Image 1: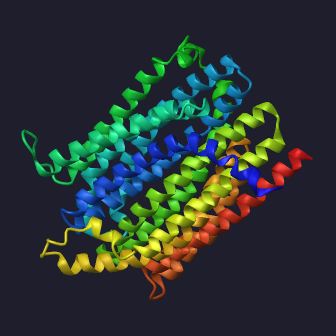
Image 2: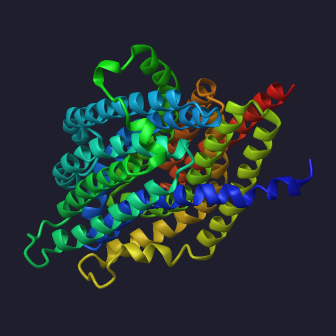
Length: 455
């Protein structure tokens, strides 16, 4: 097929994806702002925030991954203009996300005593524990927010979550500033202030999302008739069957990166802080691919509802091509500016930690070169996952991601990171190996399924 056919889809793809991208960037920016402000306090505080956030990110991956089941179901209902089916997805999705948010908070509280057994530095663990309590509780409003967001995305209304996240960022930055440094009437809480800012900002996001969606005439039919008594076990099971494998897909990937954080902790504070800097920057660019992945889920879900599989394939491959082009641009930026980007995260005026900060910058700049390469693999795998999710194909992709990340990726991280002189760079080469394996086999899975559906 003429490649121009795919380029024609770029405009609509980006129109649908850019609010999602901005919203997801907002989530990432919350973490980057925290890291920048905490990093200026000192490398030990940055390492502690990294350790605490690594546990929260694992739990968050389960919640966000599960909530993505709502999007293709809502998109399929929207494609068929089935209000009743859409209402059922919305109500049951919110119900399950609320329960899951509370469960994940409890899970982190149970796991908290074990962070001292992970081979991390004692002073880092001591700082991480109180930070963890607050950020863990922020999962409750965040996962409920995801229930609203994924449904709105599935209905092709992607701007609400964008504005909610931007508002949350403004609140987070202001609260971080006044609480970390004790400005005006606010107490000086140090890096714990960053955790409080994150918590409050996520409640603000949830409140805004509910208010805006309930005020939109398009969503009025979906807010009607909500009752716990009307929650049906059969529909819960249907969502869980789609959401659980999606949750595990994201868990396997985030778990791999969390494992990289822990391995970096074994190598020392400088390696752990450098890993967090490189991971923050890589996560920022990854959100563009994540936004395109959601766009793929929405558009593929719509075409699945209509039964137009030839159009479905064109739409998905156009998003796939757009993601590759974007990630190549980001890879070039990382290579060109790998020496200067880490400087954002370090207070060079801090004479006491000058030697340690210099080491952190050196390691982080080397990691960004590896990150430049895996940008492309990461973009391919996440867009293919989005397209397969739109097809409601989640079990085989779950197995693919497990093998890619935990049979290929993590053992490579351990071997190169702990048993060779590559250290942190070796850990990131392991990440690259896992992402590339996932990208290849997810693409092959999508290609097989779509050709089979077209006949």
